[in-house]
Length: 255
Image (tube, one colour):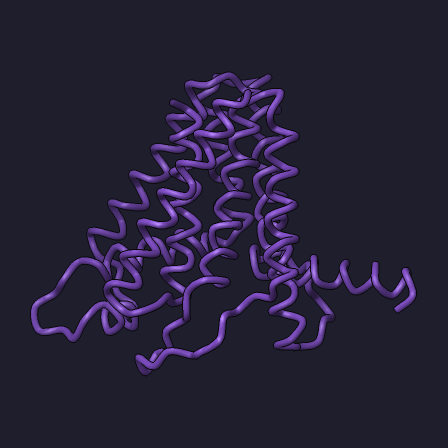
């Protein structure tokens, strides 16, 4: 394949990843393709990192005008709005699904309902409050780097789950197919590693290592709960993995 065609293909894959990560019309005009959608997941972490970069710009710019807590709120609002709150919706639904209800038939059944319970609301509120508190107390440069690193590590956690864990169908049957290619996993890991390397001058080595450890811990806890309850992951628990990994990364680096 000529170099120009390869670059055009990679650009299309990035657009598809961006469309999956946000509500922005970056995938407008692209035809549906299961094959390309799977291949596009190599750029899922990068797409999340771009959303984090937008939040970082807002945090830094707003911090030059208003008090840092105000800048932190605006930055968090930016990343939530740009993503369409998709992962936070999944996080809320997963927390509700992990809360047993009398007479139901398990977590998968609870995820199929559209209710928003107390557990989900409280979890989202506490998660967002944690991010705001961290961004309001660390220097602006570090907070900006944390937003980029946190969202990219969250995206990488989603890629890892798709590469190592089977999905659960709504009927409760597992699809015996991992939903990412081997080269896609390597590309996602490489872009995440590069982003962390670029953040090193701000976060320092200890902060970067702590962010990685926190992301792994948060993502794996949610993966374990999902596999224990349902034998795999769903769209909702995948969003919860993203949020938990991001929270773990930011909390770990803030230590």
